[in-house]
Length: 260
Image (cartoon, rainbow, N blue to C red; front, top):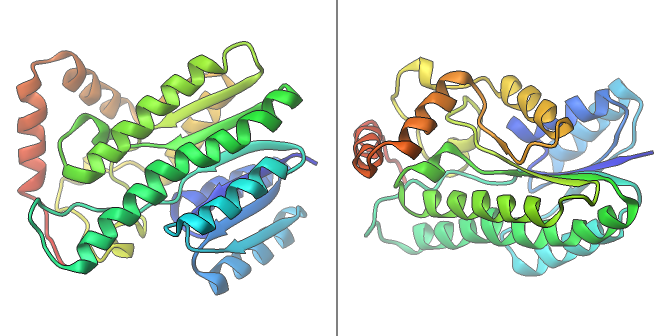
């Protein structure tokens, strides 16, 4: 039976990916911090879809724990999907002080950037050997803006995944960067942040993100920007004057409600 490994798989986008792949008959290995919630999610998915669902409760911000997960990935038989989804918002302004914020910023780099590299690398060899597999890395439309550490991390994820996709051409293995815009999930609350006060039409539905992603993966696409309106926005930010990115970012930052 083919297996999907999903980080951040107990809630939000990760849980929706888990449901979609379980519905296709894939066994699951779900990784997240909340042990009780993770176990319940795995029981529910196993019962609903009659698949194996293994919970691994672990803090991926710890580099030693990340190495443990990398070894599990490299040794998982019939690994068909790796979805690097774990993450949280880190929209703090330069100069925001305190050890808690500095720790969050370091953890963000570990969880969303370094682990994407580590876990993707761990999956490549068994997938290439099998001649099939899909690596899905969650980036963000923030990769085209200037929102501090978070934008820098997501720019890294986007560039790394595009490079990986190029390296994997003609191997039967795909790498796809997913760049969703804002979604109503637990993403901000995990980091103690309020959702931005932006127009509702700028939000995208998490289920739409999952369906568009899986469709793009099947087609071998290396980049997914869910929702047509956002593809247009990103096209403008990519091909227009660089000042547009600054103005877009400034407008967004004015909506932010920081709570630490």
